[in-house]
Length: 589
Image 1 (cartoon, rainbow, N blue to C red):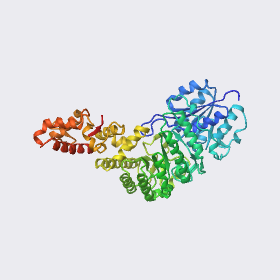
Image 2 (image 1 turned 30 degrees about the vertical axis):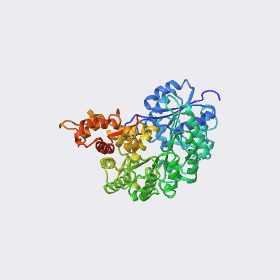
Image 3 (image 1 turned 45 degrees about the vertical axis):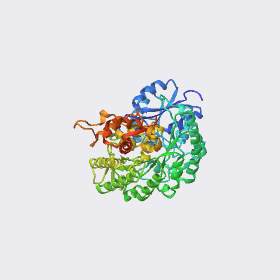
């Protein structure tokens, strides 16, 4: 290959606030880079913010002899990609290519506004190779390249036809993470074990565009995971991104067996998505996955209203969701994640309340375990909802892509204003938060559950909503479990009875910050401390053993007890109360 053979592949976003802030790694670009590298090209991948793009282009287009620049386009970054296409074309004059999930919705108008040369639809491995052969070697013709679109002389959309998706996924090279530009972050934490989806959810891009399910062999998947672990010694958490990972129970069993063998050598945990009905029919998968290190399971809930679930084509019932959540808790899966769609078909005060009540029920089934987030319905291109919104009682805003990054509803519902939809989301979020606080305050979250969330954060850097929004905000509980999860301390029940005098009680807070003395007596959150309780807290500094604490207390309160043994029993009861309030832990040394 002679002449220019450099290719820049970019996945960029504008900086935004909230849950969608920051760039998200686009694994697909690294797969493309690997394919191109094998074909003799010099591909480079950049993930970052739009503000970084001018510097990236200026530094690399000439230096790397770039023949083409490609942008990954999704629902959120379409306007940014459109603007950057114009920038690249006007300043550098190289070929500009756009692909990604939004490409299916891009047509003649996008070509006109962006000035890009080509749009690649569908899986791009073969299409991009053939296109680059045309660009760099004048080999073939546009009309011969399936999956390719370009503007005709009259501005009309031209296409080479639809390309069949890749058949043998095992034949694809592993992602070329060494081709990352301008980033010192470690890659390899995400993986796809298959492509396609057999389901038909009305709101989902995958189920409407990638029907043909193709699965990699477990052997091939484990080779990629092993390669990623070798390259990144700090990698401890694997995210399996497939929508349909649980589709084949036998394959899940094989994967779990392989993960168990790998985990003998390396401390790793993992995440996967699961389809509710498949898991409900094969609940044994939950025990297998939990035993193989599954830390977080994502399931689709979307709504607590059966009629809405049917409209979405979820092939799921509220009863099945409840069963799967209950079984996941029974199998000791540490975290469950799910989402509720706000502003969808049939939304009303009644259906909204039904969904909120269902969310509260799930929180009670899995307290401390299930994370329930909310999001506005997004009209992804080519989905049943975006193709015929009226049949769902919806109307898509003409400026949906420009006005919202999931902070404003892009879709309106019959009978509801945008303000009504926002109010539903606010009410849902508040009720979820209130239920979480209530469960925590009423001590309905098992000790082991809370400890598992701190262990997940410490060991794997995985933080749940419960960890961030409930546990970390309780000053006593947070320090209590931080010390215990680190191995620096234990709770009272963890101290051997015959060794208790030799262990050191240690309070979990600073006296001056927490103890209210304004009324002339010590009080913590409305709890009035007796003189003995306050002295016991003062002595619980971690510097003295329980036996030494007793000696100090007895010098002060000897006249109140018949002997030090009676004081010891009373002090132990007080420490048990302190422990239940997360006020003290116990240290050996």
